[in-house]
Image (cartoon, rainbow, N blue to C red; front, side, top):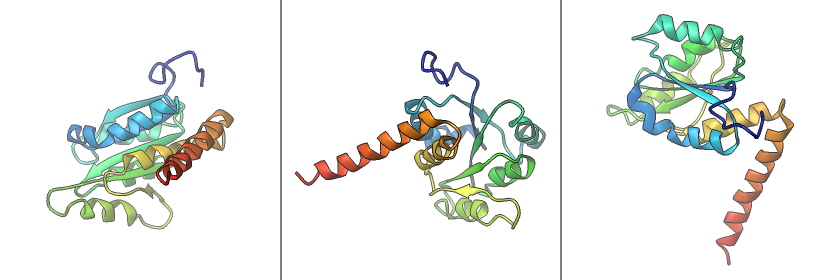
Length: 166
């Protein structure tokens, strides 16, 4: 990861997948976190139900394209993260998107209840910031510069909390 280029100009290391373009607002915090850490990413709107062939192809080709982590956001039935995880050996982080019918509980349960053997890490409903931070944490094992940025980020969180006591 070169610091000379913007994160979106380099080969992406994280793929963000959305089941619907209506989920763009919910993944904005993830995009900001990845930019803050200088992690190049790409964003694709690919539905497990409406564009299954494209979603499956993206998942199957992700590793050969150089991606290291996939973040998949979906609402309602929320099958996208599980379908993606079934087609790649990369870590998949699912973001349950808040739905109108059950306030995202349906999405959360759909993602978190994966069958044994095909894991999907799952964050809180609309928890895209933590999804990005988890992606950074996973990649920090391979990229020392990310590990140091993550250490500084956590120190800044501590300082922010402690400043509130003054």
